Amino acid sequence: MNPITAYEACPECDLLLNSVLPKIGEKAHCPRCGLRLSRPSKQSVERTFALSIAGFILFFPANLLPMVGITIMGNANTGLLFSGVVALFNDGMVVVAIVVFLASILFPLVHIVLSLLISGHLYFNRSNCYLAHWMRWMHHLDEWVMLEVYMLSIIVACVKLMSLAQLKFGWGLYAFIALIIITTLLTSGLDNELFWQRIEQLRNRNNNAS
Ligand SMILES: [Zn+2]
Image (cartoon, rainbow, N blue to C red; front, side):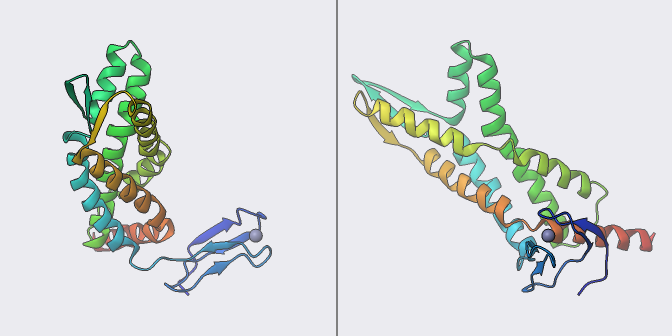
C-alpha cells in the first residue's frame, strides 16, 4: 500500500477513511458498507494518451468531411457538422445554435486537447504548473460534451427524410461515430485518483528539485 495522503468520506455511508491508492490489480472497499472506493486501472495514462491522440486526429474529418448527402428531386446537398449550427442560426434559433456549437464542436475539442495535454505530461513525466487547472477544467467540461445528443438528432432527421429523399452517408459521419466512441472511452477509462496522485508526485518532485 502507498503512504496515507489524506482523508476521504465514503460516498455511500459517510465513514471517514484514510485515503490510499491501492496498487494496480488491487481494490479498496469501504469497511462499513462494502462500497468499492477505487480500483486503479492498468495503464490508464498510456491509454488516455493514445485515445486523446486518436480523438484529436478524428476531430478534423468529423468536422470537415460531409456527414450526409441528401438528394431531393434532383437537387443534391451535403451536410457538415457545422452546417447544422448555421441552419439553426439562419432559422433564428440563435441560442440553440450556440448551445449546439458549444456542446458538439468547441467543448469536445477543448476536452480532447486538455486530456491530450494532461496525459502527455504524465506519460513523459513532465511537470507543469497548469496540470491541476487542466484537470479541473476537464471535469467541468465532462457534463457539457454532448456528442451523443447531436448523433441522436442526426438519426431522427435521417429517419424522417428517408421517405422523401435519397440519403448517402459520408466519411464525416463515420469519423463522428468513431469520435463518440473515443470520447466515451476517454471519460470512462480515465483513472481520476491515479492522475491526481501522479500530478502531485510531479509537483513534489519539482518542488524538491528547486
Ligand atoms: Zn461506506
